[in-house]
Amino acid sequence: MRPISELIRKAFKTGEAEYLGEIEAVWPQVVGEKAAAHCRPLFLVKGRLTVICDSSAWLFELTGKQGKLLARLRQTLGQEKVKGVYFRQGEGAENGENKDPHR
Picture 1 (cartoon, helix red, strand yellow):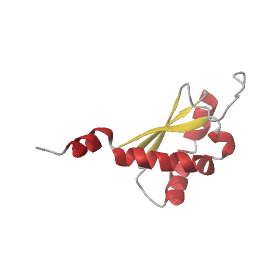
Picture 2: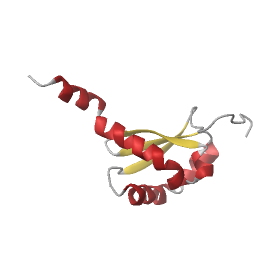
Picture 3: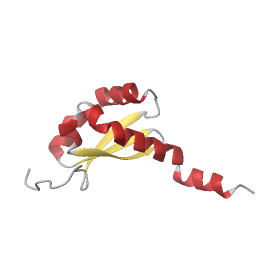
């Protein structure tokens, strides 16, 4: 019989969840303050970082910089736990308060 802690760790991938917190902390440094106001790391699964963007314009912009952003993440964090960065558009991408919905 396996210990419950092992089952919980396996179910929730706590290592990746903790690492996502580190990514969130350096995200503005990696993508820049302006871009960070329009996108945020959503989840990390099997080394694949999914980032949500608030518009198709930011999705297009950041997808074009995918390789550079991955290199910056690795350089900033000093690890290669992120194997790829993938972007998608959706609600909840904005970081900060009092965002103008018409921008």
